[in-house]
Every structure is written in C-alpha cells, then in structure tokens.
Length: 257
Image (tube, rainbow, N blue to C red; front, side, top):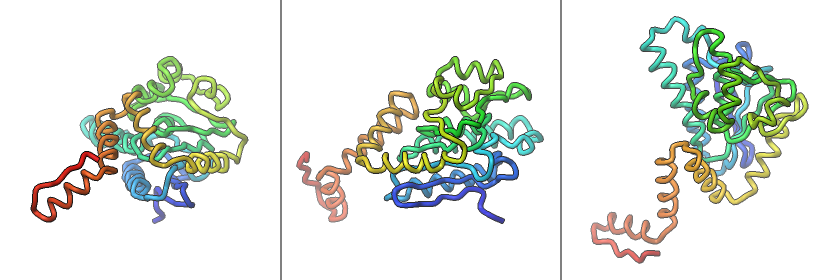
C-alpha cells in the first residue's frame, strides 16, 4: 500500500504531499495520522527552512471524507474526528518553518482549513475555494470558523460558511484567502521559487518572526512565547554552564552572558 502522505526534501525546501488522488486527497483518519508523521519529519529536518504542502493529482484537498465520518457516533465524531483533526492542523500551523499551500486543485471544507493552517497560499486560477459544510448539515470543524476568521477575516468566512459562496482563485485574492494567483500547471514551480527566496533569508530570524506573528495572531501564544524565550536562552553561556554543572554535580557558575 503506497504512503498516504509523504515528506520529501530538495535542499532547503521540503514538500509534504497528500497521496489519495482517486478521492481528490480527501482526508480520513489514516491520512491524518500520516500527515502528523510527515509534519514531525519536516520539523526534525534541521536544514529544511520552508515547507510546501500539496496534493497529488487534480485536487489539493477535497476536505474530510464524508464516508469516513458519516457512520461515527456523536462521541467518536467529536473526539476521533474533530478533535484529532484540530490537533493535526494545529501541528501544521505551529510548524517552525514557514509553510506554503500549493493549490493546484480545489480546496473545499477541510481542504481550505488545511490551506488556512499554512502561512501562505498560492493558487492556480482555475481552482475553487469554500466552506460548503452547512449544505450537508454540519459545520466547519477543523478551525474554519476560528483560524480562518483570524487569517481571512470574518466576513469572507461568513460568505462561505453561511452564504454558501464558492470563490474562484481570482475572487479569493482581494479577500486575502489566497496570496497569489498563477496559471494552471505552474503553482508548484512558483511555490518552490517563492520557498527558495524565503529559505535564503536568515533562518533563525525567519523562525522568530513567524513565532512573533503567531503571538500577535493568537495562534498558541503561550507556546510561542516559551519557544522564543527558550531559543534565546539556548544561545547563552548560562545554558552551557548549567548543563556542565549538572553533569559534574557541582553548583553552576553563571555569567549572565
């Protein structure tokens, strides 16, 4: 059985690829697990400075696979589906590297929530984006009414989630739902070039800037604050002095440097 989600590296740019083209990369629990594993791989790849997220075939991600959750009990739907999806998408949003969603196919429902968890979105002009969940009697459950509102604005989300509007990429651009619109077949190349330009910038400064923006945006501000402080401390002589003292079983001699 082929991998459902893979992580690949080309120099400083990593790529996470959803591999379920026959379902337009719709997400089920095994895919969410595979995505979480791929995100861990990306996080641990020390020399990867930017991560692209894309889908195999004609679709970026058609959202949550209805067949995967329709038969769940209310309790399983809440805990196994909604809460677990939140956790995985939060993992993507909090990835240390800047992320770019490569929208070469439609991003609907959970697919748009997946794209919203990325820092940037580059879309081919033919794709469509929206939150159609209420048309089948459910609501956006993977932060479509939370993170998407913070990133796109409440009115754009109202138009999609309440009004049922489906936007084309050119329509989504002035609303801030996507950052760039490109011609069909060019999104990955454009995203790779964009990623390489980001990767050429100072990596520590870029990661710190992403964390500071996350604090301002309310994206796990407590964790971001601790990560910034810990990163600062890790660069000081005091950290080394403390570790050496622990290893040698003696009081530490700190220098505040």
